[in-house]
Image (cartoon, rainbow, N blue to C red):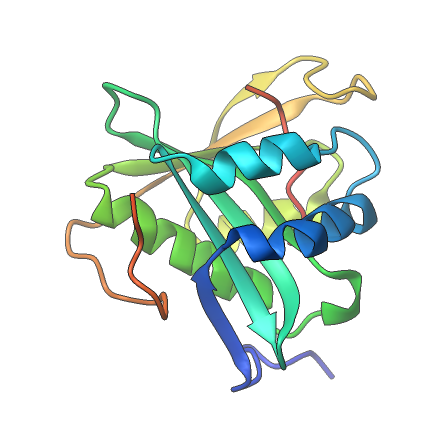
Length: 178
C-alpha cells in the first residue's frame, strides 16, 4: 500500500517567520547530514526581500520548509533548499511545499525554477521528475562529500494560483530531500 497522494487536511503552508527560527535550525540538523544552513543564514533568508521562505505546519508543528531565491536581473528562480521533518514520512507534504514554492516563483514573474540535488538522492530525483523537472546539467564534486550535484529545471506557466495561506512579501549548495 502506498501513502496518500495528498497531505492531511491539517497541513498548511505559510510564509516562515522569525519565530520559526529554532524549529528550522532543528529540522535542518535532523534532515541533512552535510551542508547545514546556520542559524545566521536562516535569519538572513527570513528577512531577505530576494527570497521566499515557506513552511508547512501540521497541528502547529513545523513539518517542512522550502526556500526559493530570486537572483537579480534573472528570470529564473532557484529552489535553494527544501526539507521535511523526519516524522512527516510519505504524506504528500514535500510535493505540496514544492508546488507552493513554484507558485511563489510565478508571483515573482520567474519563467523557470532551477535546483540542484545530490546524485545519490534518488527519492528527491524521482519527485522532481514526477513534478515536471528535467535534468540539464551536472556539477562535479558539488557537495562536501564530493558527490555530484544534478541540475534540474522546470518551466513555470504564466498564471499563478494561490497555494500559500499568507501573502508573500517580498551561494551554498544544498542536498534537497523530499
